[in-house]
Amino acid sequence: MRVLGIETSCDDTGVAVFDTDAGLLGHLLYSQIKTHADYGGVVPELAARDHIRKVIPLLDTLLQNINCERTDIDAIAYTKGPGLAGALLAGSAVAKGLALAWDVPAIGVHHMEGHMLAPMLEDDAPQYPFIALLVSGGHTLLAQVNAIGDYTILGQTLDDAVGEAFDKTAKILGLGYPGGPAISRVAEQGVPGRFVFPRPMLDRPGLDFSYSGLKTFAMNTANKFEELAVQDVADIAHAFQLAAVETLVVKSRRALQQTNCDRLVVAGGVGANRYLRTALMDMTEAEQARVYYPRIEFCTDNGAMIAYAGAQRLHQADDDLAFQVRPRWSIEELPAL
Ligand code: KG4
Ligand code: ZN
Image (cartoon, rainbow, N blue to C red; front, side, top):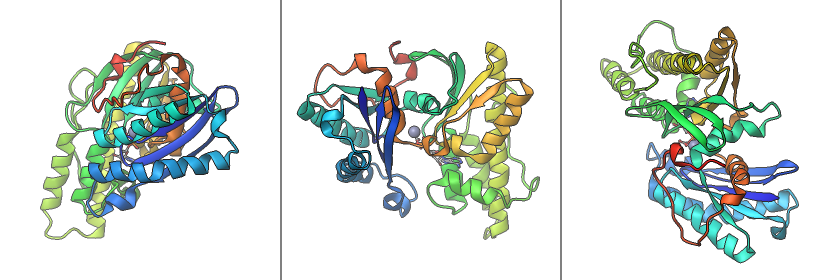
């Protein structure tokens, strides 16, 4: 079976074809960074319009690249939520329209399930059960994953997501959008120890996170300067990243210990952060556990993870043609396979 995946939940248009026998046949991504850069963040209406413009041409190119005919597609998976309502609607309308025209089923995929299953696209895929650390622009959570659809949230952010904290801190430091990659780039030049950020929630038991305090601390630190020099920015970025990553690492260790599990899967855009990857590698090694990541390009939003997740839920296809999206949607609501 060949499943076409369409991702449009935020500011990336992603398309991919996953074959249940041959694996991933190809994928393409169009990033809207240029569209939103002047505004310092994603403008939902512009995102939706850009998806509408880009998704069909991207799809045509992909099918040509991989020599796949429309008639070879057996199902269409699209991101149903969570995400920006207008952006989700753009993708779901295209998916439902193509499904009707090609007479194939459409499958609404949960974006975070897509992220969580992205490491399954790698040769060295994890076995179930595992602990998932989902870190994106909209989510920060630890979940126990026993099987596809069998998810228990162990802890999550009480306020901002960690990716959001990276983005907001980058904006405060004048690093622009998207903030995560910018912070991690300049942090490499930072002098360790010049600033010390708090470690929210570390002294409390449990596995919840809080990231709004780090952004406020970044703001207060930056406001002490009349003008931020390049080195000041690097030093603040370094201290911010250290604090943001340390809380993720400590809570992930707690989750592994608490569940007696020795596999950790990291997914979502912040999973592309090099410092986080190294820190989690060290922590899991010390715990005699293993950490699994998708390749870097599948950490951030992409069509491949949606095609893969849809392929796992072929028998749970939508039973109508309505464009129903779920801008807010907990992974715990997903049905088991
Ligand atoms: O998963 P994703 O592409 O989209 C959402 O579903 O939100 O994640 C985007 C988030 C943004 O907040 C972005 O700043 C962050 O991931 N991000 C990073 C890095 N690359 C992307 N954060 C830290 N370091 C990175 N290298
Ligand atoms: Zn995402």
